[in-house]
Amino acid sequence: MASSTPSFIDIGVNLTDPVFRGSYHGKQSHEDDLDVVCERAAHAGVVAQILTGGNLAESHEALALARRSDAFYSTAGCHPTRTSEMESYEQGAAAYLGEIRDLIRSDVHKV
Image (cartoon, rainbow, N blue to C red; front, side, top):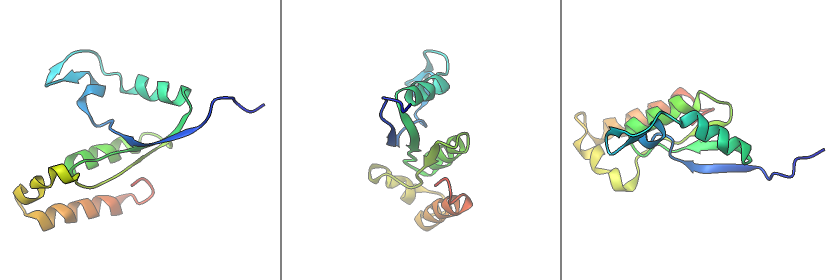
């Protein structure tokens, strides 16, 4: 018999935020609850999640998380509000974008 719970794909999941690891404003406030949050989403009908990477570091972290589950995928890029990070990147903006491109190519089935 089919489940009455609708299925969803969450397209903008920010699991790279430290809040899911229990950290608020740089201080540990509670235990890491990332797995509990993901389990709760699955029980609510979320069958896949697209984890967002808002900059180079978060893109790496999002891909690492995506590799933990067949239901996770990730984005890789630089959010428009954070483009100053490209200009201040030690090797320059072109290298920053090149690293994002390399990250995407490293796992095209997850990014």
